[in-house]
Length: 204
Ligand SMILES: NC(=O)c1ccc[n+]([C@@H]2O[C@H](COP(=O)([O-])OP(=O)(O)OC[C@H]3O[C@@H](n4cnc5c(N)ncnc54)[C@H](OP(=O)(O)O)[C@@H]3O)[C@@H](O)[C@H]2O)c1
Picture 1 (tube, rainbow, N blue to C red):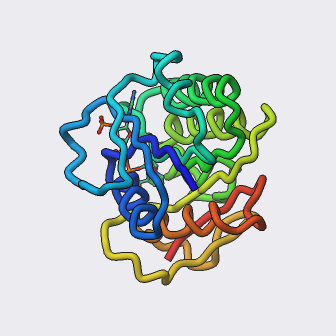
Picture 2: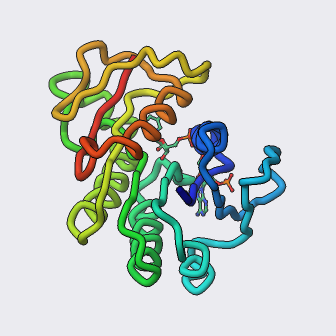
């Protein structure tokens, strides 16, 4: 199976790339900073390019079975960076015939938090949450076969598989989750058809 990872130079994207390769996938990473990829593997293809280069992106997506996005944005201010990237990616997916997208967003995009916690989270992360929501909604409403990941706060750590998930709302624990466990769940969602067209929150 061939998978294209976007955001592969990031903290979660590196885990996703490594775990896919360990499981025998053929992985293409499309990155703007190829020097940041330190991993070498015979099944890893590194393509240098910008997400704004549609022709290049279409070429990269041709014959891929799925796209996995762990992209982030560069600002906490009001922005449509994530939505703009989603539209560019989605449009190249349409042009190359790829339907399956796994999109790492954030908890909060479905208004899952309540009370004082919601006010606190929105004060700090409201703009990023709103941008992720628009990106997720783009994939959800334009004919893609999607899985949206909604992790709570991220932390570093090894993938121990000890996480909780919730398809509606938030998991009970509401604790920070390691990026490696998010990566593990993303790959589980890639392989398990029960995650098709779902939006799953994850915490530890
Ligand atoms: N921090 C938290 O507690 C938290 C909680 C829930 C969800 N999230 C979300 O989880 C996602 C992944 O987090 P992370 O910590 O793994 O991210 P990260 O380490 O910051 O990685 C972000 C990735 O996005 C890429 N990127 C950003 N803007 C780009 C652009 N314009 N064109 C191409 N690539 C671009 C970066 O590429 P370069 O290496 O080239 O810069 C990098 O590969 C983010 O969307 C974040 O909002 C975060």
